[in-house]
Length: 344
Image (cartoon, rainbow, N blue to C red):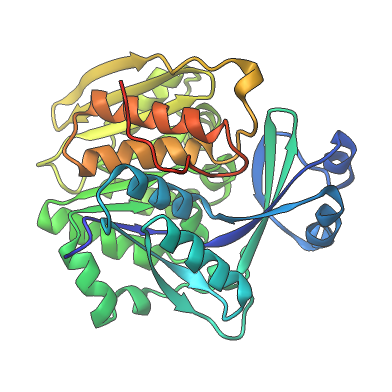
């Protein structure tokens, strides 16, 4: 049976620990941020082990792929990215297999599997990523007969914004195929630094966005880097929604989450903005929140998975909020097991 949804991203091993704020200060990190590691950050992956660290399957798009698979029938989602030939890539494969996600990895034997230090302070999380093998994904892998068959069979695509730093040709190949065949191409803004420092790469794939997901900080960074002259989240979403579009047969939906505040969706077609809607999130008692790492990825997974299942935008937002509300009750980007079904 063909996979309905193909996801592309940077597969990573998350090394997660609750750390004191001094740990952030030592490495010049913000409490709620995501960055690529440079030389000064490299000791972090050993040092974080002192804080009773957990090893978790990570990488934003891989988390979203697992979330989408969680709300879909078995064998609905396939995920592509690059890993090393080591115990950590085996760990990721097993974690995906447990959740019914098929791993179609490119293996780079000369590089270790990528890793991400997840520094939790209170309800905040700071991500520091060493891409390693994940940085070596090639469009040749996507276009190989075995993988391109998955592309052709799928009706929906999801790409993590972080992949803009890795292999833009692969993103373009998926976007162009989606536009030519009237399939749904979705993407995530993923982190403020992408709009700031990978603006040209982001703009090159923007015409293919049928669905774009991001949070308020990423939207603000996009507005600043593109000189939109607005700071209101809804106005930023309207500007993105009305950007030129390759496939005018489909509308564009821009989905902006705001943590504990409402989610905003702006929809547009060739005539301009067709709708703006605000969706309150599911309230959760502060005492129930264990860890916010992966909450946004879970929302994206629940949302995209619901779209793949044929649900409306309204329903998809509800499922996204529901899945995220479970993720924050657990350690890391995780979902409840035994598996539970969505309830309104």
